[in-house]
Length: 425
Image 1 (cartoon, rainbow, N blue to C red):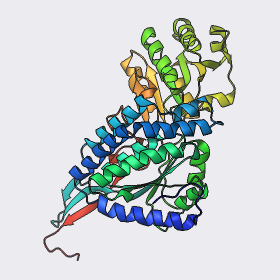
Image 2 (image 1 turned 180 degrees about the vertical axis):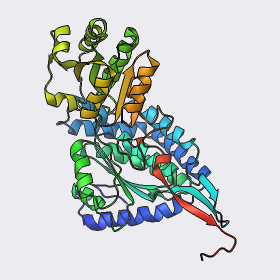
Image 3 (image 1 turned 45 degrees about the vertical axis):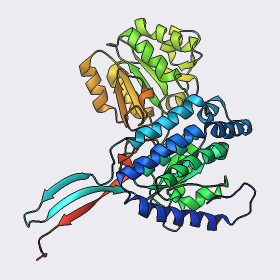
Image 4 (image 1 turned 60 degrees about the horizontal axis):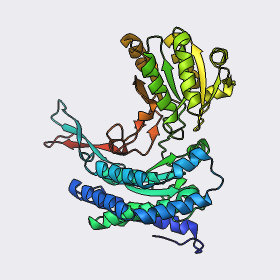
């Protein structure tokens, strides 16, 4: 279903129709053979490659109109040939993953002879509300199709043209494989009330809502949703350089964690340096960041190490900058680093750099985040880097899914019970 911009329609009726279409498609998709879903996704990947000029034109139009976006948000919105190629390759990788549907997760036999199996099944219809990043259209659609779910996508107004062009390719792939195009639906309007309709569940059509965007969007979804929500919150990520860290390794990791792409949720926002190595490690780390164009806000020790560091406020320790800005603090060992992360972190992604395996083990065990890394950049917080092909986001909660949300995390389960005539006394 589609509607051109400016065409009058009754929003509630449109959204209810989208929900009914998605629910009908989900009933077909949940039973689709693995080979048919794989074919659909490979066809969609090829369609994106063929449609690259049209997608880039649509993206250029989005960028031209997005005059209020800052540099980090414009980078999230931007598509180029390299990113489109990566998008298509990601879909193909998802296509070739093992089918997550129908897996036997566990089996046991009760004393009365009942055989009980726990089997993975699709969730049903997933509503995804996202901002800025048009690549979410492809990633979310591919992951949902592979896991047997229909998806209703609501893109932010700044990415709507790009998302339309990408969604058309995903639907083309479904049609080529003989699957219902309604399994991937893009809300055709930027009207904010469309979000409200989705949060109300579209008459029972939506089984799960996933928000992908800033704190304002996520807060609204969590507050107003009448269906379950899988939240992807902010990424206030840390790198802790321990006294046992190799300096050259630490320099590479810290610079990459912050500056590879500052606008992604896995970008490091706070650097913690052990006082035990501050005399040798702190100044080079700060110099690397400053020379790369990163503004630093630090404590007294950081400011003493480099006069270009400005004072950090209390709010800086908890801030997700999504920009070339980083907070820096010197701490007394791993215990204080863990305490700082517990107090200010967002349970997203945190890393330690150290050659001491005991300290690394303590950090990985005690830091209660979805992803913890030893001697690696926080920018590996990405479903593709985990071998998932892509991700819908990084879940920071503790129920159902945590960390990168891929195909397996988009399934639930049911119990299949086999008997031989048993009745309950």
